[in-house]
Image 1 (cartoon, rainbow, N blue to C red):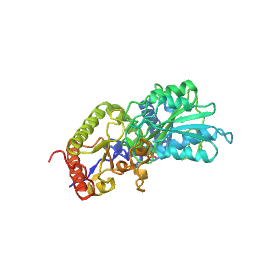
Image 2 (tube, helix red, strand yellow):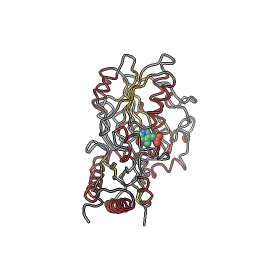
Image 3 (tube, protein in one colour):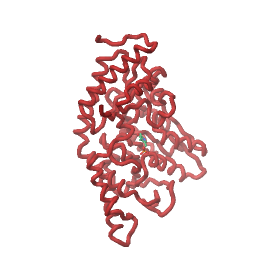
Image 4 (spheres, helix red, strand yellow):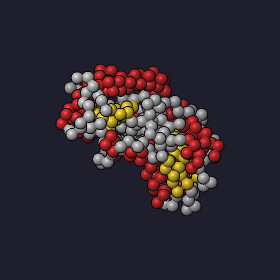
Length: 392
Ligand SMILES: *Cc1c(COP(=O)(O)O)cnc(C)c1O
């Protein structure tokens, strides 16, 4: 039996059309985009410029506001530490929230060690931050608010427009980790009042190891670079550009922009189909995250009495995740689910289904059938005493 990939929040396959766009830049067009003295360099530079425009267009920015990085982790680090570094030893205050990716949370922790204050806001049981709580947390010395667009584990979308409005009124910078959202949801940095936005190519059917940070130019957001060197990317990020990766990211963004509406509707259909199958056939099943304000391709559920790790072992032919991939090396229950108030017992029995562009209805049906079967089997052999199947 062929394997089914349902872990599209961890990473997505490269779209074949994206790969086609990249290939020439590994072969004949291998030039360094910084080489000004010959046509090899000009070809690479032209391709990078085009990608910058494709990415900028998707988020309603200007091409000059895109800084290429190695991914959203680096973009998050640059946005947060880059603002802090301007302050030297004068300190200041940062605001974030508890279900952020580790790239944001750990960057904030690093700042705390350097003497900055950090407020980590709580979320409601669906995983949303209250915009009024952001407003209440803002102080005289607040430099930056960092709130993600959509969560990688539970898919919950944050009220970015309201948070952006609060930040705009109070004149603090607003950074958004949109690794899960760009190419899936309409993200307009102008309308949302976002000053910096982190993007990752491999979450939207582009290659791994490339990303971008949008940095507003009007009014100009000032940052200190994390990586010094040849002064690439207007001094914000030195290092020879990953031209094939950048070309792939640009192509992925253009495709996503063109296909987003239709693809979103299709993914939502598949997600609801999976959800209905599971909820109709398994008792004591709980949805984690927001019932509506969530990524179209995300379903996160807990099966009472069926350990998530054991489930995944039993479902070896289906690529799933429990908790986030970044922390699945440890057997700690997910910090995201804990922040929602999900009891440990249920957090440990949670599974994330990440449906993507290349999944089919037949795969969803096969996966649902196997999950239903496996939950039943685990409950039969475990001390779980609740109802096993509604329909026998
Ligand atoms: C994947 C992800 C990241 C990290 O992105 P990389 O490009 O893999 O470094 C950061 N934030 C969120 C929300 C993510 O989903």
